[in-house]
Image (cartoon, rainbow, N blue to C red; front, side, top):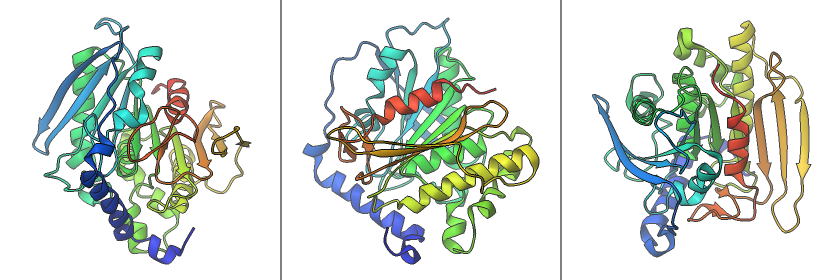
Length: 337
């Protein structure tokens, strides 16, 4: 896993992500999106406010009707990526294919180079970790705009992110729990991770205690799916461990006022498919509903990647589990209540 004394620093995380971003810019031929005919419709959009502007692409499945509310999946890319252009979240996740088959709307926001030259979402910056400010406000506004424009179901808005986009997805789960039904983090970190980087003595329970004040009267435990490659040298596996512990502690703080981070998981299962990466799934249930409130997958042999049988792009891994299908199975069973 390496020397955690150095990997705790956000600068190490950013430097690694920036190097990958530079690679994306230097090898355009490798990142050209393999566009295939889709059965649905693609429509551009943008949202502007006093916090700036965010552009996005919407994919509507063939079954979409304005009078038939559908779920929404918001797919937030990582550093050196776009939503639906070069080296895109769209090509890496193949969410369009899944949306066409399952019947949901996909939204692919793209970071502005004016906010981050490496196209990272600024999830480590305090000014982008609060409701009504920065990138959380822009993405929340874009989500509400999509829900209103396309008649989507506001109780079934699910956010999935990769790397810096995963950090932003987690932030949305804290800042907008009244908007987001579930969060999926692939190679991401905990809410307010920069505080831990400043003071490595802080535990996940300590950072969890920072979230309820931000949630305010809207506080609820947003179901969380965490995916991590055990060979990731950019976002180290300990960050996924901390995120799981933080989210479990937060659930306890919301429910009882006491953190719940030490209890044993409800289930642990290892899967070893022929010819691909093995993975271990660890689940912690919501005591009231009997379903997983926090689900985590540790994928053996996977680096800083999103895996799937048809995943495409610089950060794609076709040898791992189908993360898009896993994300949708988790999210589709958990509307916001």
